[in-house]
Length: 360
Image (cartoon, rainbow, N blue to C red; front, side):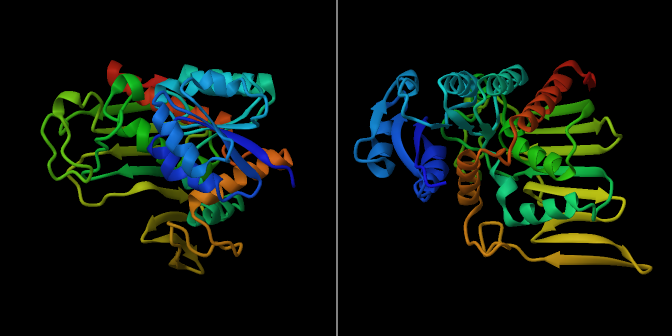
C-alpha cells in the first residue's frame, strides 16, 4: 500500500472544492495531477490550490482521460454528465468515484454498472453519509441482528427552506429533478444500506411544486427565481420491498414544517428500533421494560469509535483510496447505488402516471 495513485478531477465546481479536493489532498497515497472543467479558469484555480507542481489543466475531459498515467478519476459534474464521463473513464482504465446521484436516469445508472463489470475497474458513488460515525456504528448494530428483521423504515430528507439557488440545481434538464434526486437520494441510500435490502417490489410516489412559484426570500440560499424553478420542491414515496418491508421516503427543499431532518433514518425491527434526534437512539424491550439508549455522536466528525478523528468526507475518501490500493470492494457498491436511482426514478414515474410502479 505504498504506491501513490494519480488522480484526475473532472468538474471543478463547488462540490470539488468543498469536498473532493480538500480530502484527497490529505491522503498521502494520492497525487492530484489533472483537472478538467468546461470553464478552464476553474480547472486552473483548482490545480493551483490542490495540484502537483506539474498538474495539467484541460477544458475537455477526454483529453484528461487520454493520460495513461492517471489511475483514478473523480466525476464532480452536473447529473446529466455523470454516466457519460464515468463510463468513458472506466473504459479508459481508470477507477471512478462519481458524485451522487449515480446518474440522471436509471438506465444510465445500469450502463455504469455494466461498464464497471466489463472493464474490471472500481466504481463508487459519493454517498458520504454512510461514513458518519453514527451510520458506521449503526451498520454494525444492524448487521449483528440487534434490531432483528427491519420491516418498517423512514428515510428523511426534509428542509424547511433550503433551496440551492446556485449552479444548475433548479434546472430539470441538467439535474433530472429537485430535492428527491438531490438530497432524497442520500437518505434513501443510507436507509437501504442499514436495512441491507435492495429488492424493491412496488413504488408509489408523489411530487409537488407548491412553493416554487413564489419568491422564497427567507430561503437559506437566498431568494429563488420562480421562472427558473423547473423541478419539484418536495417529493414523497412509499416503497414496498420483496420481503414485505415498507420504506417511506420524504424529501423537500421547501416545506412548511418544523421537524426537519436531512440524511437521517428511522428503523423499526422485530428486536429494536433506531433513529437520530440530536443523538443516535436505539430502543426496544428487555426484561419486561421498554428502553431507549442515547448514543452521542458528533455527525460533523468527532472522535470516531476506532480512535480516528476525521470528518465523514475524509473517511469516505480514505476508505475509497484504501479499497483501490488493497483491491477490495468500496463501501458504496455501484449495484447498490443503481437501486437507489431506480427507486428515485420510479417515484417520479409514479407521480407522472398516477399509478404504482412495479419492479420485475
